[in-house]
Image (cartoon, rainbow, N blue to C red; front, side, top):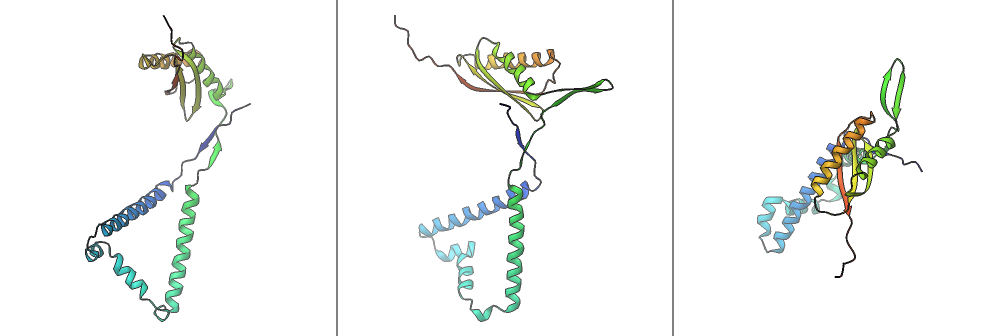
Length: 201
């Protein structure tokens, strides 16, 4: 079965959404601290001077139907509608939009033609180079964004740093030997074999 590569596109509205979420989180933390201080018997008047929570509540609780004119109703309704549309659009922009990544990598493009290679070929070369090391029991590669991520399993945790360095160099050499692009290689240790049986003398 062919493996499909899903990626997400960069979104220019992501920063705006993160700023709004950060502001909401700060407000929740701030008023949560106010409630905690109230529970600790801090003077409500002192806390009201800081947060104005009681002043705002009293103003809103004192409103009557006659205090809200038709003009104010229209303004509030319009502001609510605009806020809904704005935040609704931002929420939609925050949703990840996966797409299928390109399936071929162009190696040569000249007057004689175009030479391309599938990402799986690069992954297979990396996996083969990694598993040739005697300390590696399994390897799985994933090519994307002009970089190669390889997860490897070791026979034992001892000497893992040296082993990973050697494997990374072996993968780079194998890519160059096959005429494939030598991209940044990121190795991840996914596990190692544990001895489950003890040898009895």
